[in-house]
Amino acid sequence: MTRVSARRSRRLVHGGVRRMVPLAAAATAGALLLSACGSGSGSGGTSKSLTFWISTVPGQDAGWKKLVAQYKKEEGVSVKLVNIPYDGYPTKLHNAAQANSLPDVADVPALDPIWSSKLIDLSSISGNKANNINSNFLAKDSSGKVLAIPSDVTASGLFINKSLFEKAGVAVPASPSNTWTWTEFIAAANKVREKTGAKYSLTFDQSPSRLRAMVYEMGGQYVHADSSGKFSVDDATKKAVKYFVGLNDDKTMPKSVWTSGADPSAMFQSGDVVAYWSGVWQVASFADSIKKFDWASVPTPAQPVQASDVNSGGMMVGFNNNSAASAAAKKFLSWVYEPKQYTELVETSGFLPVESGLSPKYPFKSAAAQAAFKLYNEEIPLYAPISGYFNGAQTAWVLKGKSLATDPTKTELGKAINGQQSVDKALQNIVDGYNTAVGG
Image (cartoon, rainbow, N blue to C red; front, side, top):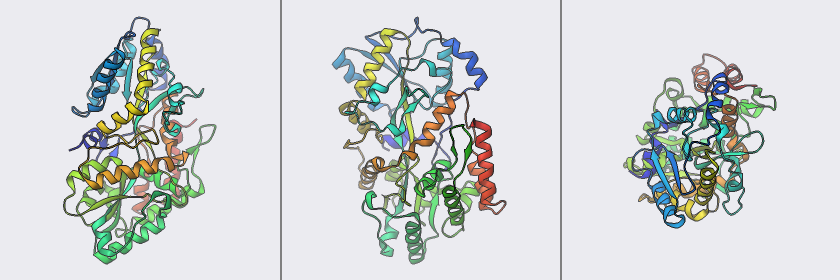
């Protein structure tokens, strides 16, 4: 299996849905513990020796190993790479902050208020036009300080059973710049199902992220906060969500995924489903696991918005431990994001890049996987800014000591699909849950 698949496996839960829970401490605890960080004068590396923490399965750190070895050769600076088990990583970072022993650089899954005040401002790196970093996906504080830059990004995407489409004689868009709408796609998928005898037209991850992507593409903002922090849903969101719920008719889409947790990926891989709405992390897995039919990634729908729900695969940060080490950490990060080095990282680790204009050459043997990554890289520059809203919102919540520990979307819409409540009632319950957990 290629690097992408294994790396993503630590970030997935049942059915291929990414774990996107912010690592925020309670607000009161954050206020009490921030002082434990101290000035950092006794911690950290030196101008010639840095510590870099990551968390990934063994063998998936190949890109970082390559870069730190190259940096030592070019700059004479030793960067000690420490790979920490994922399950203990947030706790280790939290404890390191309390003990004033944070690393100099880290690739983290999310921010934590216990150490957010120690972060180096990376705006000079993100603002360097030569790097062409997508500003929609940066983590910033209220002053505009760039706290983190994604090491890579993930995005929702559409997979089809290419064999079924060809058997039915139904065409798909050739380019994301001239894509189909959701209604056009569903009509096409239904036609394929009817002509080939497939069981379902579409499976759809039981994921708030995947639903947000669909809503954004249909012109809505999903559950969105105003300037006061109060959440609501707009009319376009209501229309999109009602459309989605209506698709769960056990013909176009199976009710069992959103009501009882059936595995949409397994359904698609069975060969009896026309299409699957999931994301880029499936590509390497499908390249290895799907043998009984031809599959393909195809342009995502736009109705009328070209969008996705884009999240950080990891967030690169630098810690201000002492003046010499923090300057060296920033210099290292600046070097990493230069297009030459960053392309090497993307290719070796199988990342979807946060930088535009690159032409990475991935190690996939599968032509379908190569085409899929090419498509994602073509689509990302076309995404509307709304695509990065939730990723940025999580950062804002963390900096306030809040977190959405459990998104009510799956439970409430599952009830609506089951006919236990109206879509309007489900959306109101979701809004109430957001306002309780992270509002204000």
